[in-house]
Structures are given as C-alpha cells and as structure tokens.
Amino acid sequence: MALTLEQYKRQRTRLERAVADLRSGSSLLQAVARAYYLVYATASYAATVHGLTVSHSRYGQEGVERDDFTHNAMPDVVQALYSGNKHGRVSPGGTPGIAGGHFNEREAAKRVDLLQRDRKDADYGPTNVDEPYSPDEADERIAWANKLLEDLGRLL
Image (cartoon, rainbow, N blue to C red; front, side, top):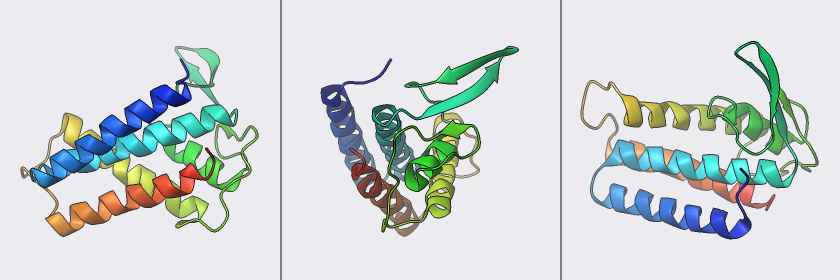
C-alpha cells in the first residue's frame, strides 16, 4: 500500500532519529542499515509518486509492483529515478530524472546496492566482527545515503 506524504514524513523522521541514535551509540552497522532504509523509503515514495513500475515473476505468475517495491529491485528503481529511463525490469513512469545530482545513475545504483548489503549484514548477519566499519567508514556510508536522499528529494 502506498504511503501518504504525511506517513512518509513520519517514517523518515523515525529513521533519521534511529540513524543518529545508533551512530552516537557506536552501533555503526545498524546506523548504516537504518540509513539504507531511509533511502529505500524515499526512493519507494518517489517511485510511487512518479508511477514507476517493476515487472516480476513470482511463483510462476507475472506481476507488477506499483507501490510496494522489493529491496532487491531498489538499485534498478534508483537507477530509473535518476535517469528517467527504463532500467532492467523497471519502467520509469513519469519521472523526469535527476540532473546534476551528487551521483550519476550508475553510481547511485551502486551505492544503493552496497548500502542494501550492509542492511542485510546488519539484519541477518553473519559478520565476522561486531562492527565491520570504523567510525570514519560508517560515516562515509551514511554520507552516501544523505547524498542519495538529497538527490531523490528533488523528485518529491
């Protein structure tokens, strides 16, 4: 089900607070994971607003995602949002694309993919150490998310 603007804003506020609280408490991987969720929520909301769709096949049946995008589709969704063109299984709807952002479409998709991997490590593990990133490395990844959020915000 698609979020309303108010629901999106509340979700974003909660996630921003979680990133800050986790980061200040030295839960670095968890902070990066919540930063990914911020990007996911924003990209999903922008995709819904602009009518992006993702075609897929589940259990032998063809379907289309219109407002409930899978995490695995997110790099392609972000690339379509940035480019304004079809990418993979993603049709761009009416998105104008993002010109002059922090990242080009491929860089943005790559960053989303890396953040998503961090989210999976944080949520499901396993990792070989409690915190795989130094504070500087975690801050760099959180900065990626913030730049993605700034770019995606141009579509809202």
